[in-house]
Picture 1 (cartoon, rainbow, N blue to C red):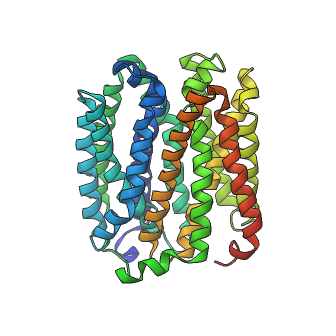
Picture 2 (cartoon, rainbow, N blue to C red):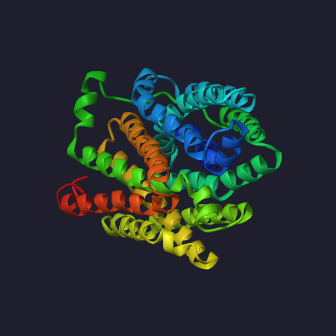
Picture 3 (cartoon, rainbow, N blue to C red):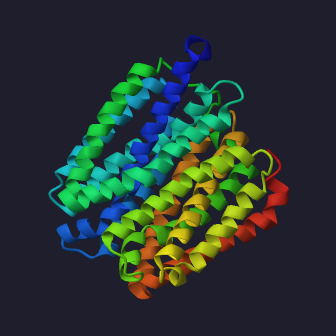
Length: 390
């Protein structure tokens, strides 16, 4: 396939996939910044509106593997077109949602597109990349997802605050339409390269290395999203910051994610264990002291930057390990990883909501840190056996 594409077309295609990742990541997490507005429009509390993230994430987790298996033999260009049509149509429904449940239905439609998109995008970028440029291609995708936090979520939040959250979803639909046409123009026909029989999938997914990664993913992402889902109301109620300041803090989380992707690309091969262990330690400490850091804007900015940098590196390391552990079934393994990642997102949103209801808003960082510290202990115990066996 590389022989049929020029070098510029290869990197243009990867860049366009990164922009698609930006759009998909923006829509997944933009409700984080819009929860107060959505809750107000439907006369409900923020913790109830947080179900938009929980149900979305759990839908992705349930649908990732079956939808990936269903589409495993499809041409990748054709599959992307179908996913974008579903994605755009669901956003239009969200923009005109007449009730919370119709908005939820729209989000489930988006989740269906999301489930397959994230199963194929990173493996596709790695496949398109020139020989020896796998890490660089993956970094493009991660920068795209990070830019969603830097630009997409804050801008979507600002638009939602100024013009209404419905305008945010309709705007995402319009951008997605442009990205779809660009991808269809740049990408050639790309046949599926899955070379594993369907009956062998259980054996692949039961590999100890993959199970180790899946376990760490579930625990770490649950801890992260226990706090991150409610960062907007946390910063306003506990920190006393204005909406504009919260947007700035979200920018810092995303901007530091770009720094994290650079650190990963530079040091991942040289320090395969430290590149994961240190960010897990950092995010654990960050969540433990989150409550005490918001007394000052400067300490809060530092915490947000460390938080964003750590979770970006963690996610990149886990995903590249998935690809390394299952080179013969990357789409399937990545779909399960995506599903488990979203179980973590949904579980974190659910647990965070319960923490707010039964403990306090200020406790979400402590509870999140309990999960990440558990993951750190498991990693330290099991790393010697499984982390070096790829």
